[in-house]
Image (cartoon, rainbow, N blue to C red; front, side, top):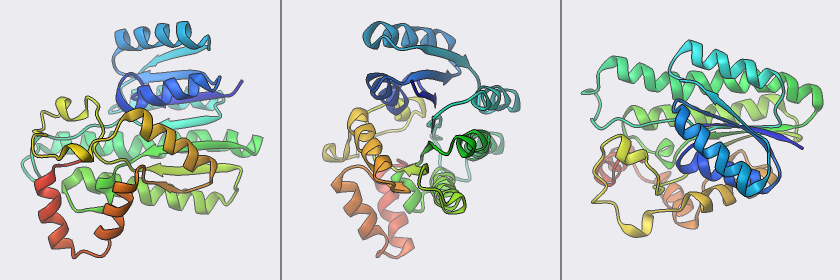
Length: 250
């Protein structure tokens, strides 16, 4: 039975990955800061799918938390889903520098270190996969959130190219607006986001797993967002900033 480790696993896209992988008979290692939610999620998954579920409370904004997850990954996993992340309610440069550094710790350093922890075992077994959850925001200029997610995309593509083994897959997942707790936690106003742009987390994960199986290095779920990204590449950066600023940060 393969094992998957998912960060930010109790809600939203992370929880959708947990459900999907449990349905595919993966053993799960769930990572989150919230111990009570971890326990509740584990109980529900065990009951519904009959799989093994391990909980690992850890704060990936700290060295101690990252090291704790690195250690578990080195014990052996088949799939790593780097999903943990958050947004800021205020625009750059109004966000305190400590909060900006914390975002880089979670979005970039943790992704780098956990991926590096997973790769030796995957290379030894000649198989494995890493999904790094980024965002459509990575393709647009919208503050430090989009900048950090652009790093995730570039890192994932670069790492996949460097590994050069089709049996070890590294993919950046770039969803658009998803119905999760992300915006509420960041106290972001989503009233101006058109309804047709919202995606369901389970649909995002379904497309992500399909694209992973196809060997894609970047996955943009849904035709609407594929079109937005394609058009965005043709639009001048200053116009991108104007449009993305009106739509929001994710």
